[in-house]
Length: 63
Image (tube, rainbow, N blue to C red; front, side, top):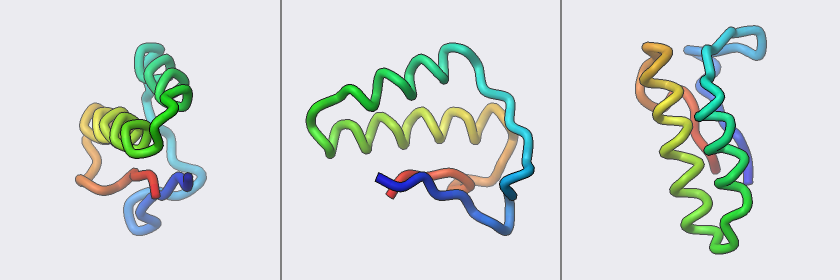
């Protein structure tokens, strides 16, 4: 699974605010045994981080 970011919006030097709850959810999502469910959960967490940081939709995704 790949972590993707839109290089027009973010760079590897960009700073994001990520809550402890978001980190917990990311870690827990990786333990989901069914890949489609894991992918869906990871995408939901990333969308939450995007929203909380006021970024454009699609700035972060999993592939």
